[in-house]
Length: 469
Image 1 (cartoon, rainbow, N blue to C red):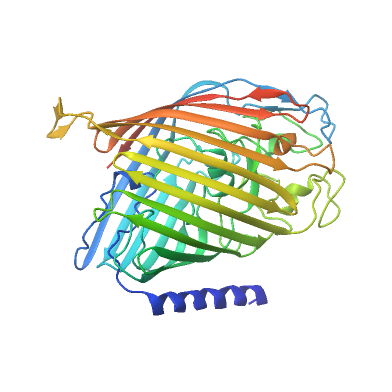
Image 2: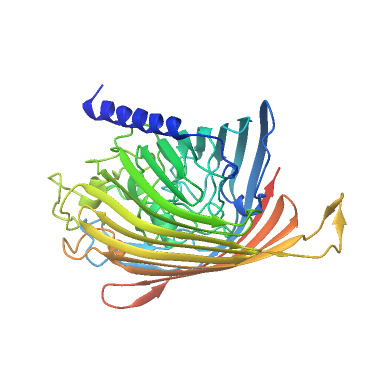
């Protein structure tokens, strides 16, 4: 076993020991599955003995993506024709993006587990046409009680979690099917490892994790990631027309495909303050967090011959660990993020905000993201099989902005969009037909600014029919 692996295990055991010493039962609920937190009650009494349930969720979409392309003037490889960045799959489409199998289990108040498996995985897989079509989205076991954002416990306590789980700074109660620029770039996918949390009284809490680290790769921030590094794009020849466009890509933390895939361990810490009323329905949560890891020389990803981490930033034909003839201006092999979150829940109002400041291989990038949603309960007018038809509606508005400072380096880095400033506005309305079935209609205005100051857009409409059982 390598020295770094032993060090990782020792840190994880130390973290576990700390949590076990401090852990005691808490009065707050376990965070619900992603996209369901806003619908969960503030308090769920624990049942004695083993409790478990299985479920399934499916999403059917109508998607319309604008048709746009931008010529890459300085593409570093001669493939016999002009090369462009282009919309992944323009036009109107009806598509089943994913079917998710869900399993939940608990034993009393202080032992719980969750498994979520995505089949299809259309909007997450990268490259879109050749990436993994089945992924384990989450799979974790937790000892102790974990407090969801803006819910205050009765006193001190803690938890320890092992497996594959969402980053603790991620917004899990999502009200739109699209993703903002920050949530795409920094915390869209779950990571694998250890996480622990401690309640320091009723108002202050701390969290820490030691995880594999999501590999750095590129994708379009709209619904489809795009095809980059597929066989159709392998230089220099043969070069065939790819099935899908490249998209207008940004660097982001992609799916952890395999444990020990070459990424280096990532350490994350957070310190927060929360307050809520006795019902747990109204509250405020503020979290400051940071994380860092060492970038790997390369990370192999399924479906693409591009490597992740430094290999991606170095560009093609790199001859050294840092830099190459078509590289971004890399300075080191560190990846660091520092950020702050706020959650506000008040009656039907839900507010989320996040700020992130990043340094990746010495390159600076920062951004903000904010979302406001309001759930309106509707009066009983119609019923179906003993359930109310159209029990509530929820409009939502999200704004996100991403500002990379990747100046310098080679002008022939093959993805110029990683240097552009981005702004994205997502607006939508979710209508619950009956509990477990809803429709979300939304529009994304996605604007980016080229290095010459030109403003361009790549907008998208999305209507999602979601069924949960």
